Image (cartoon, rainbow, N blue to C red; front, side, top):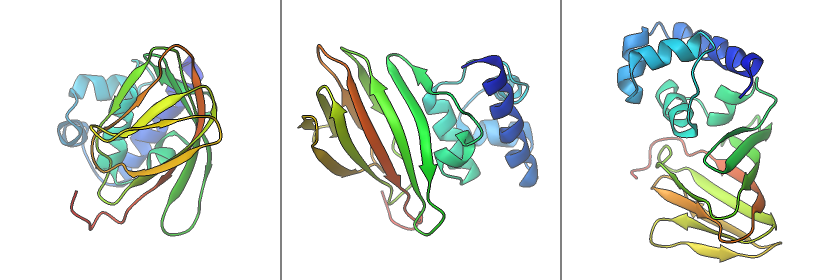
Length: 176
């Protein structure tokens, strides 16, 4: 992520945290990250992982897209790039993302908030995705929907995959 995007993310994160009246220590502990890492992130430094950003969004009780909305560049790590395309304004909250996975990528994702579902439509390449132990192989044009409130993964083999990912957030009342 470039310096401007890091700075923008940091300022947005700080304003969301402060709007709740939370200290750095409180949010860092709740998200399971070091206070020093959160401090650097809010200052526009550091290199947050996708999982770190997800954990912060969950603790702030905002969709991932709300946390990254001010950023206009793809977020990425370990062969995966993700960029917010659009956010719905209704209920349930729905976010749409463009996602690219490099060849020979295995990306494990932590469970999202209770009731959250992901819908993936493969545009190019091939992809295996879904809850760990129950993945589905996709070819271009195919779509799957799965519960994302449990650990799940995205796996490519010898070619990259490009897809559209839609996340529909649950209201948090369901049990995982």
